[in-house]
Structures are given as C-alpha cells and as structure tokens.
Image 1 (tube, one colour):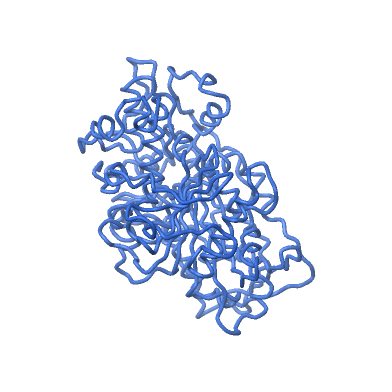
Image 2 (cartoon, rainbow, N blue to C red):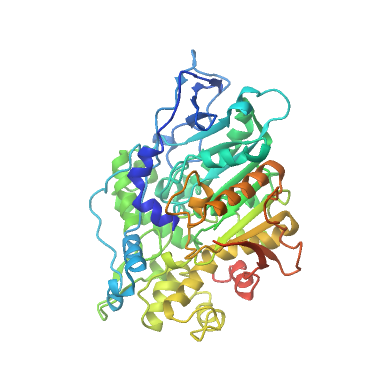
Length: 580
C-alpha cells in the first residue's frame, strides 16, 4: 500500500530522510552552474550528494512549463557553493478517501456504512504542509560508493540506478521510502562492483499534470514527466563526475514511478532515438487513463475557477499557498479511487455518486500529442517504443483493493463507483457492458477469481490500472524482459517497497532473506543486465521456458517460476484502450 504509507508518513519520513552521518570530509563536484558539496557516510561507505538542482526553479513564468536547464555556458562568477542542506519536497495532495480505505481494510467492512456511499469532503483550508515543501523542488540525490567516487575518471564508470518515486502523481518525494543505502550495500555484496544510486523529485498534481487544449496554448502538458526526462538527461551529462557510466543507467520506479517509467520507455512513440537510459525496473506500474480532450479541458476550467483566476497567466502570478490550496481541493475532494474531484449528490437517492460522463477528468499523465502521442499500452502493442532497453517488470497479487470503492451494493453503484471512476468514457464507447458482463461477469463461484462484489471490483481495478501494464511490457520485450510476481500475503499495492529499500529488520518485511535476494536481483540487473547471480534461484527471461510467459514468484517461504497469470484475454483487451 505505497499510497497509504505515503499518506500516513508525510511529515515523519520527510524529517528522517534528511539525516546524514558524516565527518569532516567534504567532496566537491563542479557542475558548471554550481559547486556541489557532498558528505561522507562512514556507515555505508558512500558519498551522499543531496538536493542537487537539475533544472531551474519552475516559478513565475516557468510555472506550468517544461523544465528549463541551467545555463552552463554562462555560469555565475564565482560559482555558488551548494552543500545540499536545503531539503525540498514538491507541493503535495492526498485524496480524502484514503482514510476510508485504511479504515475498512484494517477494521473490516463493518467499520463503514456501505449503503450510505462515499461523500467527498468540502475542503476550504490548506491541510498541514509537509516539511520542506517548495515549488523550487526539482532536485535529486546521488549516493556514490567510496571506491567508485574516488576512482572516477579511471576506466569505465559504474552502473547507475535511478529511483522515480510513486504516490499517485500527487504526492511523494525522492527519499519517502528510504535513502537507497540498502540498495547500495546490496550492489557491493559478494564482490560486486557496486552502483551509484540516484533519486529524483518531479512536479506533482496540478503543478505537474494540468493539460487540455486551452492550457496547452500557453502551458506544457505532462510537465512532471518532462521533469523526469530532464533529470535523466542531466544524469547522462553529469554522472561521470560522480564515477558513473552514462551508458549503464537503469531507471527504477514503483506505482506512479513505474507508470512514469513506462511513459519514458514509450516517449515520443520511440521516434526520437534511444531513451536516456538503457534498462528499467518497473514495479506495479500505474496510471489512470484520461480519455478525451473535453475532460482535460473541463479539469483545467475547474482549476481556473477553484483558483479564482481567468487565465493561466494569472495563475502564474498567484502565491504558492493559493495554488497549494487549489491543489488540496482538487485532489482531496476526489471520488473514491480517483485523484481529482467531481461530486454530485443525486436528490433521488441517499447514495452520492458521480456524473463522470460529463464532469470528470484526472490529474495524471495524458496523451499530449508529443511526449505521449498515445497511451503506453497501444504504443507498446504497435511497436512505438525504444526496443533497445532491457527490463524487469513486477506486480503484486492484490494491486487494486486499496483503490477500490467498497460502496458497491447494487449493479448501478458498481458501475458508477468502479467502472465510471476509472473509465468515464465507457458509456460513449459502448464498452461498459462488455467489461461488466463478459470480462468480469457477476459470477461469484470462484471461476473468475472473485467471490463477492468488492473482490470483483478490485480485480477490475487491479488488472486494468496496475497488473496488466506488466504484461504489456513483457509481451513487447519478450526475452529482453524478466518478470516477477510478489506474492507475500496480503500482497497489496506497495507491499514490495519495504523489501526494495530494506536496510534492517522491520515489521513491514516478513522475510529478511527475501528482501536481500530481491535487492540482489535488482542490483545484479543494474550492473550486468541480468538479475541472476551466485546463490540466487534462477530468474529466467519471460519467454525462456514457455511460449506463454514465465514469471518468478517471490513468496514469503520460497522463490520459484510460475506461468504468467496475466497472459489472459482481459489484459489483451485492456491494452487496446477500446474504452476511449
């Protein structure tokens, strides 16, 4: 439950993530536009370069635009010295329904009034702001192992592992789940050469993902994805200064970070040459499709009305707190399972449902005609992506339940609160009946992997928005893909993240050995392009042992290979995006 963890941990993690252990050693790197100073971590035996700006602050006229690089040809003289102490978090937003999800999933369905429905709150004041929040947040961290940093410029550089955080494209930051020290340690185990670990911030919510025809006359859609792209290009240009090899870069992301990575793989439909990385690890890659320009435009107009401005130019002049409040309203008042708002109370019923066919859109990556010429699924199906990349994909068993409305006691509320939340155009595309009666029919004898209405809803949400994305990638890349399934019960969305960032025993990790083995697979892949290594169960490529696809099952008691449960007609149908 990565999103749940993020919502509960905004302040605690933010404060803890800036703690450093250092001594008097002060390594410095000349970036052209500044001198950046690091700190030596004696426990981890690495140099930590924190909060390096990779683009100009997106303020004033640069708000809602593509990121702008620093001018290294005309640097300030003398160059400023940056010791990395300015911890920064991009403005955040969290849907209010997450508290309901936590309540019923931890206390049982009886803890909520299922028949009453979900009523989004009326937000009028800005919630507590996370420590370090600033629009000047386009920064990244670099952990460079001592031996790698001190031998930079001698021979080939080290492999690089880049983390893109999740959080529904509305919250999160680079160190939310950990510093990356555990992955660095794993990369040097058993005599391995080690990796340089990089983690990035990018703009979130309305700051990074507004779109629509009117918006795009004077703003740039998918600015958050373009932030990531610039960070990756910055790494290409600068990582050798920290001991890294720009030709050995692996991008790694979970949830929205995984969905972002899929967008980076399919960027520009593969028409602009190789991506600025060579490999990718996609964990539970997720994004909500935004189907039509009308819905994007509706969201932008709602933004203007909520911010009490008439144009994007006026919005650029607003103080940060005014935009933060607007963001808090638009995200906080989201329908259940969504990340922006649209609420209508129907007077003929005591159920509060949503008029999606005319009223809704999402703060999320969108098809913009440039960076994202189409949804990633169809682009992968049509071969419009960077085919030179090697990938590892992963999904959890119960991806969808946290994002699934439990307010589904009738067929009508099921359609409204499950299908039309995530796929608001299904009525117009005449696909709602096919989804609910053919792909996921109301048959509860176990034939379809569900025995009740909520489980049926969770199956739809889990496959369509999370799990099937792994299958799209695996089929597109074939024997350039390694695929796993995380099966440690309850295997909710995000349950694998504490294993990824494992450093020491903790309550979120039920098997420390499994956590270490997962880190070994990931860092082996980053270093060698192959996750296999001494002492690990064999990890085959997707089509290596079966023409139907094989995945590695990561369970609490064992690691073994199993057939890919996602190689089914449902995923094949979702990939075509016929619900538009």
